[in-house]
Amino acid sequence: MSPAPTSETPPLRLNIVGCGKLGTTIARLLADSGLVSLGGLYSRNRENAHKTLQFCAGGSVCNTLDALPRADLWLLSVPDDAIHSLAGQLAQLFPDWRGTTVFHCSGIHTAMLLAPLKQQGASTASLHPVHSFADPQQSLSTFAGTSCTLEGDIDSQQRLSALFSTIGARIIAIDGSSKALYHTATAMASNYLVSLMDMSLGLLEASGIAPQAAKELLAPLVMQTASNIFAKGPQKALTGPIVRGDRDTVATHLDALGQHSPELLAVYRELALVTLALAQQARPEAGDLHAEIGKLLSCTPRSLS
Ligand SMILES: NC(=O)c1ccc[n+]([C@@H]2O[C@H](COP(=O)([O-])OP(=O)(O)OC[C@H]3O[C@@H](n4cnc5c(N)ncnc54)[C@H](OP(=O)(O)O)[C@@H]3O)[C@@H](O)[C@H]2O)c1
Image (cartoon, rainbow, N blue to C red; front, side, top):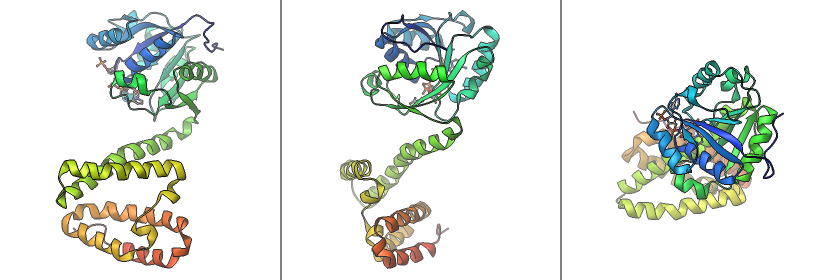
């Protein structure tokens, strides 16, 4: 079993394959912790590996995959679709992977993608940081507190859990069979919030509010709502016409959308139905009013076209 690193043990050597945003940031964070020393840095475009070397002030650029040195840890930080074939390439180049931990950071895929290396002795894992690595410099100060879901071989889990806890990660064990659902949840929260804000800002502008004023109007409302959701839970955070049972207000929304933005009717209706179910749990005493809203929504066309 691979020993979990401590400040007493010599640093583990880490190779990075795929010098993009996540790989560069994780390399620097782990190297700064002192528990890891950087080994080989490989990216198909040598410039990217040189940028990682400069950012981390450590490691050595390898021009080809077969030039990568022996290492205790290998992070395959390439796009999700490239992980499995890269694992196959590495397995062909290096026959013996005993004693190594190889991991990737995809949110949707499991350690199974690394099977070619596991078959040759590697211990494998997937570790997904729920963090947006848009800017490596910024992530250095914002990574601490990031939740990271982890699954794979037990000894890899122990090693990675110890390492990533040192750089401030909150480790959450996840069953590999749940990763698709888990990733759907995080993508819905992050991506669809963006889409919803885009729709809302568009409607505000259509109602005559200038773009900057629209952002200033919406930002405190959204921040306050998010804060309420995480402090009190969705049921208690829910306000507005549906939970109050204001049927006529909902009917006016539907009319306004039908006239000005009929393409948004379907999304309004589907979200209203989800909101109605939440409202019924939050305020069961308003059952009759909610039933009226339910009737209105059920006879609303999904679109006018
Ligand atoms: N960015 C995030 O916010 C985030 C968050 C959580 C998890 N992740 C996960 O982290 C992993 C990397 O994502 P990323 O956002 O860092 O991507 P990225 O910035 O596009 O970096 C990927 C790097 O891999 C290199 N690459 C592509 N194909 C390769 C191959 N076949 N062999 C070697 N290198 C290859 C690319 O550089 P070259 O063209 O030079 O090879 C690129 O710099 C993915 O699994 C992703 O799901 C990302």
